[in-house]
Image (tube, rainbow, N blue to C red; front, side):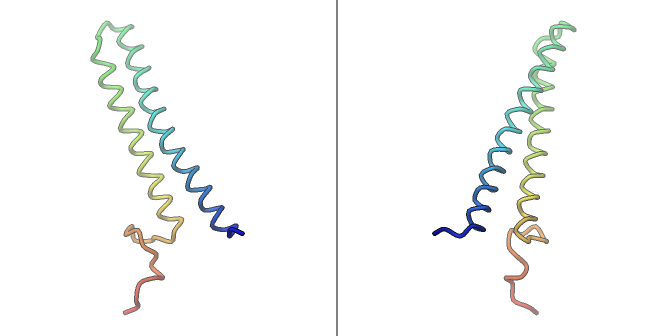
Length: 91
């Protein structure tokens, strides 16, 4: 039978991956919607859409980086190298 701790880590990892994809798409869609609405109100088409899509993309990638750092922290990675400090040889 499969190890319950391993199964839990796998499910958590799948959840994090789904969250990253959802956040990126949602950020782009919200940016597009705000830009589209502003363009219609101000008559500046397509300037505001371009600006707000870039803002949405930036927000999505910032969230991606936060999530990756959180995943790195879950593995015991305290120095950002992607490896567990307990696995390194001592000086």
